[in-house]
Image 1 (spheres, helix red, strand yellow):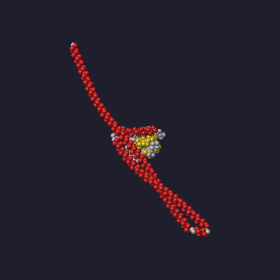
Image 2 (spheres, rainbow, N blue to C red):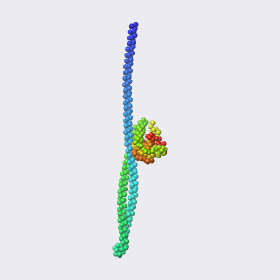
Image 3 (cartoon, helix red, strand yellow):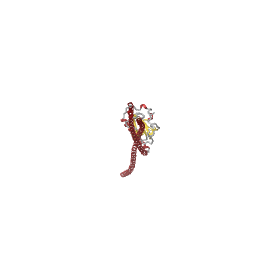
Image 4 (cartoon, helix red, strand yellow):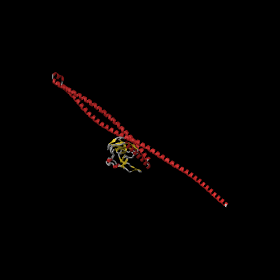
Length: 386
């Protein structure tokens, strides 16, 4: 009994020992496997992390490049706008010079006619004086004692002499005025030549700037070719616009009555076919918050209602923008302009030309981007326009 119990006990101990050893071995193997698996996971995670860093760096680099290109675009388009304003001013000045030249030429022609008449009159007076002197022998009249005739002839000679003096003075004055007009004409002609040369130089600069802008636009389009990049850029542009509208609304409390009573009665800012309608897709889930109207380059853009300009600058994605406050939270926005003719703080009347249409903001064709906002919320412009 005792022997059997000892054997049984030994067998049990052996089984326990064997089981412990097996478990230890199993735990050891599992530990090695876990270590191996953990090492593999670390390598994989490191690879994923490196790839994420690379892509982030790539995106950051791409965004940086895009920002740089947009800055270049702004520089080109602002320069083009400035050149456009200078050329427009130059053309107005040339028009005034031309009007001056026409007026001076007319005045010169009249003075020349007056001079000719005065010359003829003076010649006639001299001739009359000479003939009168010959036909009236004063010594004989004096000897004859005809005092009455002598007095009459003397008065006549005095009259002729006075008339001749006046004619000479008038002729001298006319000649002086004529010389002055010729000098003014010469100065205006020189001014015209300078303006024409200046205009040609600015036109050349404009062509150069437009060429540079085109190259930058192409680079930007290549940079945001993917839908995701385009969508991100559109979102950023929209947020920038919202921020500017919010800032303008905050700093301007207008006493005007707003657009409320003009729904469906507002004139169009310019006439043209609609390229993009309010609410239609721009890209992905981004929709148009206004309308895009086809336009001719340099076409007049008019204010749809009287108000105050509260923003007049270049804005990424929208180019040269004018924002007009009409009171009671109502605003109208005019984008893609080639040239702005009004500045921040200007009062404008309904129908007044405020800008010239263009394709700034990187647009591929001349058009006008037009928005109506009520308390910063975009409205469908077509419900407000005639």
